[in-house]
Length: 340
Ligand code: NAI
Image (tube, rainbow, N blue to C red):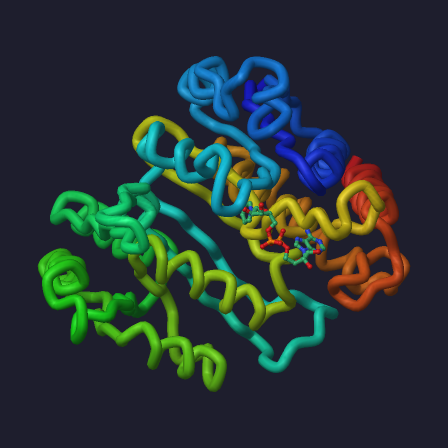
């Protein structure tokens, strides 16, 4: 029995997490979910959008599955996602971006890994008003964080048979900050002679990605560029509804979809649980449930091929969240009965 912290979040979060919890159960994985509220729901209950008990739960279980959480724009509480990653030092954000069968996009066979530094850069939250009408936002880049994320990217590449790591930067303009990030990357790359290491300026990378994504393998980015480029990469394979994410550190790992709380479709049974489900597949691999992860991956392929009524509208289907969940469970149960 695995003990896993469950943070349903808000907006479409509770719908997609309920779907994924049901599918994991149908796959036969025994999990005791420790459910906690974060964001506005937690403020209503305890006054804190990220209560200490949530952090304690993740530190204890060392693994969490998280739905999206709405962050107020301009005012209100700071992003609990950023706080969670910084407080638990979940320094590596991993986003595998793969083409999916029966999801029609401009490119076939996209197979990219986006590795994003998760704890510093312009997301350090260091902003202040210098004088009225002038604000300053500080970009923090350190040798320590840049070196460990570069090492993470190369270690990932080595463990998964990847051939190339491309560092993405704007060191032509931000010579010191992005210059340091790039220098750390080059220092680390020397220890991995069998993996090709190159770099691209971020604006050029964006253009190259939408023209020919298959020229890239593993992309390594600072926090802000990583945030933007991973959404761009998601667009290459069918959008935010299909791409998985994981935030990994020495203290634990939080698995979550790339997308947000999608307030425009919340509560309407329209949300696509696939991105969170694929994040859960990464989670199952992380906790040693490789066979169940594979079963779910095979079932996803079958369900996506089985007709538009089992897919949600964002990926060209006519079905609901519940239709997808039911089709996944039915496929998993049938597969398990066949193996009995
Ligand atoms: P969003 O990702 O919530 O939505 C963008 C568009 O994609 C919307 O049209 C939405 O309907 C669609 N979409 C997103 N996920 C979908 C899914 N699973 N199935 C079908 N369609 C889906 O981005 P937006 O609107 O910029 O952000 C909304 C809120 O989410 C904000 O408060 C933002 O701060 C928060 N957010 C939270 C994240 C997290 O908790 N990890 C990540 C990104 C945003």
